[in-house]
Image (tube, rainbow, N blue to C red; front, side):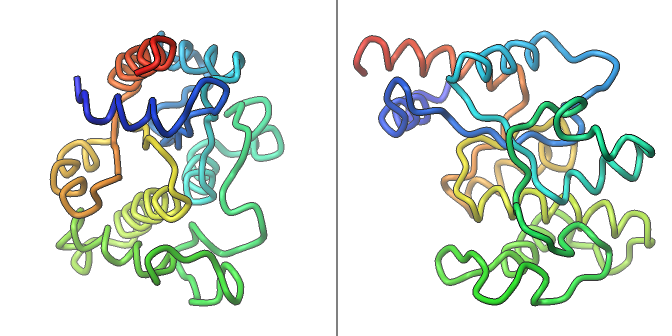
Length: 200
């Protein structure tokens, strides 16, 4: 267990302040979720965590689960928010710099496209040689984690092999990016909640 991360989250989120989790597409299943995802959902119901997604993930879900878009957020994903919460072209294969509007959110003087480019370089160094389908899915993965990082959320939840394979490299580049599986997240948060109750 990463004790430094446990302490960091316990200090950042005293009891009553929810830990923010961005969930990846691969952790969601309309036909039944894992025990760990069910635990996280329960903690969400208790007000301990906030589980959200991004528009890039929503686009990916919609492409492989047609005809459920109207029910997607409330009935299927059961998510509290989708980021960004305003119209954009994020998640599309072809995007423009102004897609999220003039004066969009920035972090460390970088916007979503700056971060997306960095994540693509780190995760998909051969991106230029990919076929169109692989380019679209890789772009969506990079955009998904870029939005998570831009909005300074706590935990990026995934089972995706591209993230798992690269997470050490990503955490070295982005020191407050924490990529965990649902099982790892549950184990970590049990320690965080215990630490918070005990007062650190």
